[in-house]
Length: 219
Image (cartoon, rainbow, N blue to C red; front, side):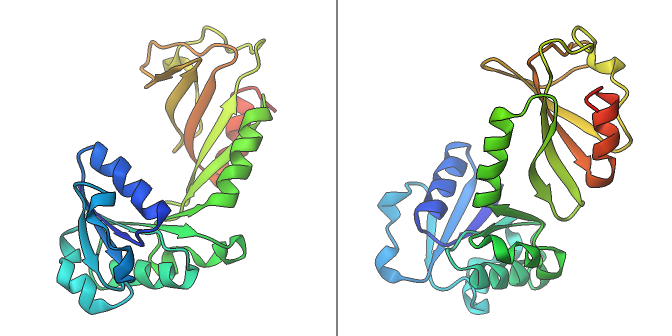
């Protein structure tokens, strides 16, 4: 997968390092020439230039990329990058960093953003996830599909203990994507069972979250 990242600060470099470790082709855009340091992210390609400028995106051949990540520390720049990537180069997936939570409402389809990542929201969600048992916690919103990544931790005494995944009657358009049990990550198959204390991760539209709670006997 070819991934372009706008902003080669600590966040952009960290994302690039993870993606390269997973064998993806990564290009970093950095407008400050003093911050261009190929040795800092071995294996990444670098473009010295502002990703908000169309000519720099054209120079990179952005139309050939699968994902654009707008990871600068400036929300205005991230929105411009996202819009250009989606409208001018038809990049399939655009992920944008939200620095100021008050700007989060802007990071949607109108600005070309498929997934908005707000660090304060994620931290708050992780705090909730750590202390919440028997409730739904929203971890992330996927803007393009209007679906959410949600997590619930089953109580130890859940009546669902031992029930196979194939016998869970989930609402329409809901998918169970992972079961976290102790130190294990289980990609659920039909015969896998759920147990008390399991963390279940779903992709679900917002309008069926209440129904999901009910069918999981959490409401």
